[in-house]
Length: 386
Image (cartoon, rainbow, N blue to C red; front, side, top):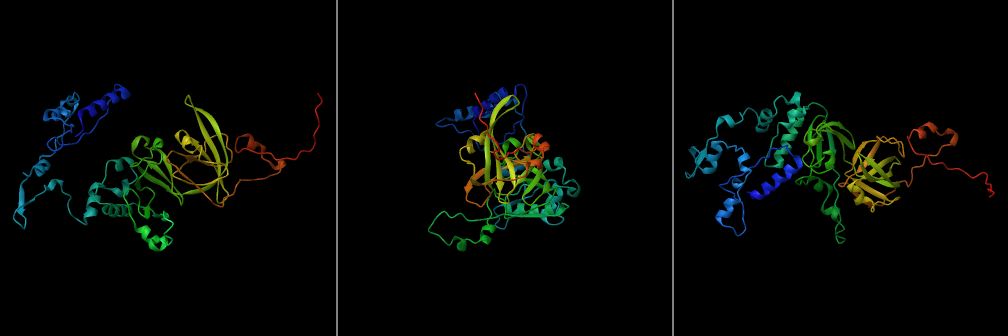
């Protein structure tokens, strides 16, 4: 149980931030089992540290557990038949809290938790009000597979690319000791399985922080709206950015920084600096990249023009600026959670596109649809007389 001073400190901070507004806070615990810990304190000190002695307690609305649940913990629940050893009794669970067994256990749980799933699977409110919690990840995989089969549409399969990092130079046969099939079979907490099957309209949950300012945090729930080979589009259904559509890239982009420059901007009365980049991928295609705010301090000294990098966990959005260095539809945003590693790859060092001056689309350059460099030859030179 937390010391009452912690709750009082939280209350004062919330009052300073929210003013006359208030927020509900759910507290859980049992004073009979877990009491506040007071170092070198007496029993009276422990009681004084309890939240029941705080000025906040008069604003607390106590919700009692069901008497039957408490009787289980107290050992006073009425039992039924005796066990084989005769020393204990089986507890009879009331029928009103049981799910009727009709088909398999998983189908019964899904049917009771998600009624009319086939017609309401894309309703954000319907999904926010329901959840199935299991103690084991294996059961979760079975439930996810069954629910996905009930959602109409075609499945799209994404496979992970698992490789082994050679941390020791003495072991040169790591590929033989740990084959790819073995790496694909490993499952860890917080990491999706090797084979990920999704459909348009299926709900998903993020397992890591991608961009907290955009609402893409660990535990954020989304609905898949589009599925691509290298990127997916989803709509946020929980948190403070409900309804926003975001792009979720799955690729590790290998690019060369063709150009980079710093820009000073003003937004909502605040001045801030950003770094703009033109990056070229292995196929020679160019795209704009932008680094702002906290990410600028992280990457400003580690990114060098002309070098090649592997970029992961970046954000992609539509290009909305009036002036663009290249006519790209999208922009890459590097966030504090983006991972950039310098690599040695065969990536074009520049993004040239040469045209004759007479064939140059002057209106295109004039309207900011791409910056233009003029390469010419000096024809006449005269000396100015003073």
